[in-house]
Image 1 (cartoon, helix red, strand yellow):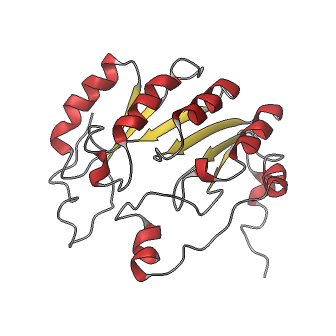
Image 2: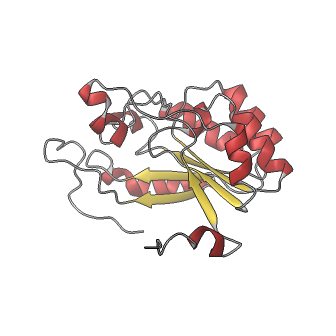
Image 3: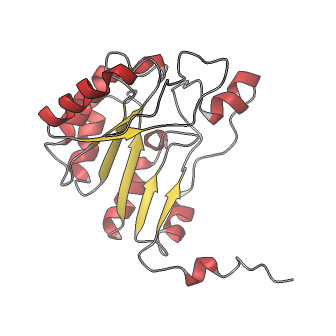
Length: 210
């Protein structure tokens, strides 16, 4: 029997985009992340590998836009991430980078902003920068916030501050929104399903809408 989905790739609209996890590397230890819950918490290695440039080249022959997501990883820790962005630039591929890692030196981020100013950047800082490491374990939220502000000097699109609401930060939403407004950056509020009964520190008391 023919798979009814087999032709979806070839019949999709030309302006559709693809969401990619290009590596399995991430220095953060977010407690509700699937890499923690399924693997690290069970003393197992996170599966996967770094996407090759050859595979990425093939993919970008078929999509005009790529979202570099962080479902199981952080894309900036792909060892050839600069070459991947270079390929996007040469092929006129729109790229959005979702990152929560503060582990690269500031000069690395600035170099990426300078060389690839057409990329869109979304920074995951959950709570006020000083508090974000309560969920983003190992993250230096204040450093990453400074890098997000630095990005404004080079990028052609306004950087995005992505803020997942948890119990520890839900009372700071208005303050964070004002900080974003004062610094002329976009603020994206996320009401996440990432809760478990034994993680009371993260469970929100209500959904917050802005």
